[in-house]
Length: 126
Length: 126
DNA sequence: CGATCTATATATAACAG
DNA sequence: TCTGTTATATATAGATC
Image (cartoon, rainbow over all chains, first blue to last red; front, top):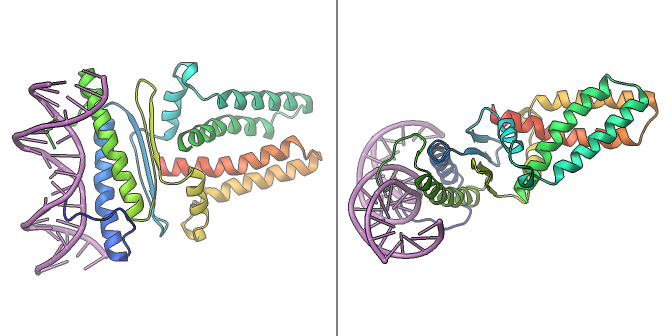
């Protein structure tokens, strides 16, 4: 594809930006194709140094991915989810003792979904 | 690239899996190239219906991406982060009133990082 | 299945306007 | 910078092993 380039940072800024722009389009196109043709959920993000974010997600949101993940057989899920659930149980207990069911309750719910997301992402990235 | 295929789910299972395997390799290769040559952080995940996860992350973890993101000028960040901070302030206040600085404190810290991650991911996917 | 081959279809680096 | 063109380099569908 075009002249061959080395596998290292393109030092010339203009050239680097042009290359990014072109390759990003192709990458997202490929991501769409693999998602549709191969029936997989795909999520792609790129952060440019200037702070621009490029993304592609085959689902309405990553939460759908997570729901799909959670519906898998237990042995395929993160063992971490058990830890999260344990923490939530402790919180629930604490909550019961204090008799405060307003703010803490909202926080507890946030904690469940956020923790699952957090552990999932960490699992994916390590 | 080979014979042209339609932009729809490949019904034949074997063919679909072979196509996924081949395209996944290329996609990850492309993701690596754009990350290195264009100096961007890239994160890619694919969930197959059978529960297999394929991933590529140019950083040690998505947290590095987030730190990079947070170091951007304020005007480029999510307005949502302000909301998160507001919630944290309310929590801090609640915490102060109750005089409980143990469990709630740990939860508060979790909430900060998780909320930033959550809002970022949601922003990326909508 | 996975690896390799081969004929096409795509992607894209360099360049031009 | 942005868009379009073109000459190459890649990617890959289908076939064969």
